[in-house]
Amino acid sequence: MFTGLIREMGTVTSFQNNTLSLTAVHRPKLGDSIAINGACLSVVGLQRRGFSVELSPETQRHIAMERLRHHVHVEPAMIMGDRFEGHMVQGHIDTIGTVEKIVNTGNSYDVFIQVAPEFIPLIVPKGSIAIDGVSLTVNDVYSESFRLTIIPITMNETLFGSYTQGVRVNIETDMFARYMQHLLQHRQKTLSWDDISNITALY
Image 1 (cartoon, one colour):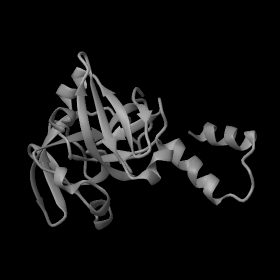
Image 2: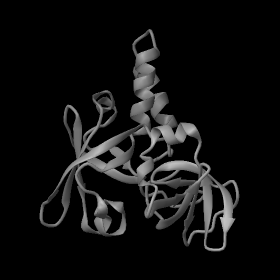
Image 3: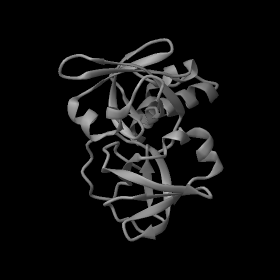
């Protein structure tokens, strides 16, 4: 489990035989879970100045592989007792979105991201979303896209500062929205308020 608060920007050194190696300040242990651009991966190697993670074929099919170069977002998994500040992020990428446009509004930036229509029901206005692992709040939702507002510090300290029109990004929708959609699609009876209360208690 992650919070969507990026620990640092790692630097990719190589990608060979399904193994991504990078330099980073963070020092994980073998087998640790770590999110790279929002995707939960396992640490399989340790180097003097960094570490390596392995990407399964399943992972490679569902993330923006072309973004695994130069700099990447690094977030270690939460540990018991950590302060919780973002939102509950699993590191499971739902889909890949495409940056439509970025508008400078003076003291912030509006970022519009296009996504396949079937994922729109999972993106809730004023709800949470993770873009390349960054925890953000959705401002507006349209038929095939949504709008985020990014403050300058996020632009300066994350990959958002390098985004341009057409860049593909990893998207993880809100976990609660995914669970609710799955239940509604696969249950024969209507959800009661007790059902909803039980679901939210697990969230």
